[in-house]
Image (cartoon, rainbow, N blue to C red; front, side, top):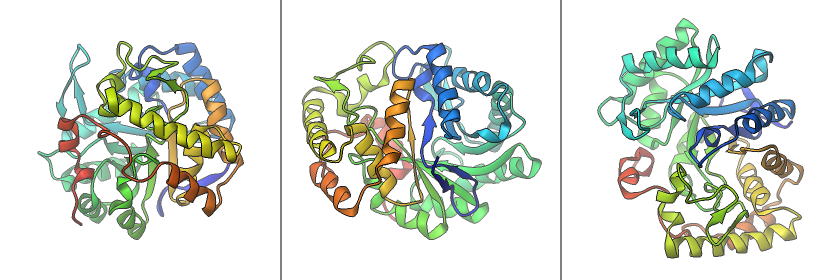
Length: 338
């Protein structure tokens, strides 16, 4: 497995990480046995970065990962956990809480569910508009000092917030959506993370499967508009937007074929080629998709190949925002100005 450094102060991690969110219902029903087998296959292949959130399945995802890690060496996995999103018993989203006490409580519960004595990378899932980032990071720094957390990360925050957080404690990575079809981080954020020595753990590299090459007419093998699949509310998966975006996928497919890659592999290889500080986190839910993901490591892209893919899927060509309007308005990462 090729390795990359998670920021200037973080651990070495696999060049590709495994995102476990889809194993807990966010993309519709999932298969527990296949999920466990996929996590084991990823570890066996040398993938050590496993990403989760305490709100994925209201704890289900952490319990799943904890089960998968039983009997494995602790140093086989770099476990990255997000916290802060609040959900009700019905699964509905009811707010965000990144107050210091809430952060410490969430950490305690995550450790219990994961069955671990420490979390490798701990991060608020978003910026809490009611809590200064300095207060949240200060609480996480106390968890680091106490040994419950090894490193601190951020997620979906903008340049100004990154600077404020890094002034309190070293930040190893920023988790943010970054793909051929979502290139917003290139405007301001990448310059700041590189200045400060912070890695990017890029999620949504396949744009929730939209540019993965496994959809026809808006229906994926997982059933994009099925019960429990949040993509049914995503603007990029709606009506004319979906058809325009699938046309981009077909353009990507054509360029990928010239490189001997599937569309998904080309999209992952593109992210890998954007810098050694970029670690794609891929939500492979099955061993078949995991094998396809790993194939992206076999053919590093030349600058000409990168340019060809970007010509096929130009920046800002996507139809529709990556989240519904209310969520987009609340994303600190979408605010401009360092």
